[in-house]
Image (cartoon, rainbow, N blue to C red):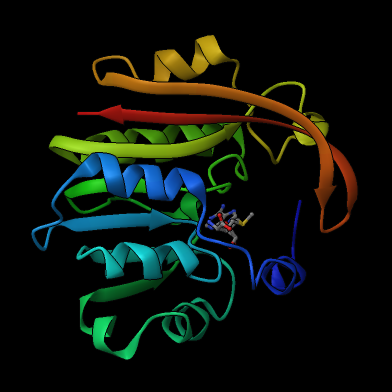
Length: 194
Ligand SMILES: C[S@@+](CC[C@H](N)C(=O)[O-])C[C@H]1O[C@@H](n2cnc3c(N)ncnc32)[C@H](O)[C@@H]1O
């Protein structure tokens, strides 16, 4: 549904690191050189924060230019711990074993059947004790009717976390803006431990 993410990157260039990512870094504990996966890494702001916290990071994003964009946001001293993959969720067939999987405002942007496959790969990537922190969209989000978007009720979100230790299921609704104009946001924050 969104073909060009450049206006989003420009509009959020000065935004702070997402609170959910900071919560994930805090909760996951000592990185000890473990791997974090940042799915839909965008302009790389959260990737940079994960690297600064000591993680090795695989940053994955489907938008053209991901390598240059994400590498540019990362401190030179951290770049040897960064791998960037420019790939859409729909073409993924595996994810590496990881101690942290983070996805900020990214996973809803795929059709339901693709989401189901991506979610299975995410679950399979979680090492014992790994932390999972993701945003999903709820069914009252303005974009919910778009078939290219997948939404979840809190009950459905909890079902996705079955077998994990659920640390947070937070639901937020607010009137706000996206790059395209005003919209109603219905966002779920999920944090869980494998
Ligand atoms: C709203 S931005 C979020 C970026 C960043 N995680 C943040 O929180 O600001 C969504 C990002 O996910 C990526 N994305 C969206 N759908 C995707 C898909 N199906 N496969 C791979 N990346 C996707 C976009 O390219 C974009 O960079």
